[in-house]
Every structure is written in C-alpha cells, then in structure tokens.
Image (cartoon, rainbow, N blue to C red):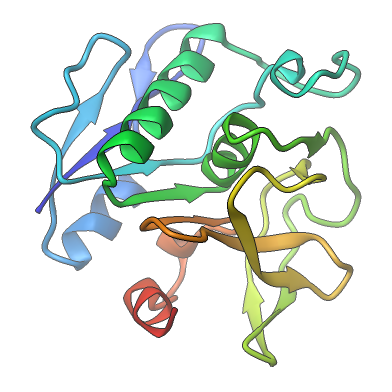
Length: 189
C-alpha cells in the first residue's frame, strides 16, 4: 500500500517531520510526498499531518487567532480530501489534518483553546480513558458533514472522528510520537 503524505511548508522550504515517516515504516507502508502539483492517482491512501493553521475564511470566520496561514497548504489539504472522498480512498488526518477534514467537509474550528498546547491529557474512547499528547491550540467547533465523533477529551474537545461511510479518520493528538496502536483503533471501529 502506497501512502501519500501532504507536505508542509515554512518560510524557506517544504518538509515532512521524520516522525510521520517512521510511523508509516512501523506499519510497513510505502510512501511518497504530495505537493499541490502531484497527481494523486498512484496512491492507495493519504496522510494529512500536523502543521500550521487553516485560513478561517474556509469556515466563515475572520482571523483573530490563526498563525502562519498558507493558502497553498490549505488548497493541498482540500485537494487530497476531495480526492479521497470521490475515490473512497483511506485518509488519516493528524492534528491539523483532523481540522482540515472537518473544515473541508463544512465544519468549523475554535481558533484558540486553552489547556491543549504542549499538555498531555486524557480522552474518553469506548468508555475508557487514554492518555494522549497535545500540541494544538485549535479544535473542532461544529462537526463537518457526514462525520461522527468517536472520542472527546475530558474537557469536551473533539479528539477522534470518522466519516460515517468512508475510511476517513481524524485524530487531534499525535499517535506518531508515542506508542499508540492506531491500527487496533481503526480495526475496532
């Protein structure tokens, strides 16, 4: 299975954090990087990694707390999500990735939340608590079309979502940075 990883961009260059590559290697998945110009037909599934904030214009808000917004990266995530939906391809969104899935399916975000940036916290999933990491200052506000909430933090922030019919998942935390068995999570769903 070949996974396409959406690139991210800083002031100088495009990049992918090594943690995502190691994460895919852990599951013996081949991968390649996707930019806005990449043809998506050769991929079996997609990974939308973490990154900077989505332009709030996509969820009908003015920017009051979003940082490092890049139109090119927003367009890339949107392209991948639309392709995955149309072609029923697996898609996993991590951190910014869950937010992109939600926004580009018509949902909205809270532009700035407290107590989630660089703080571990518990989520409640299948009525069991799980300790997860947290590096975000935004979260889902209104849920996008055809998405289902699977887990929330104990302070009621949405942490895991899935599409009601398609193999599209999102997690707000970073499973690639700790020993979280994502395969078991998806198999359980």
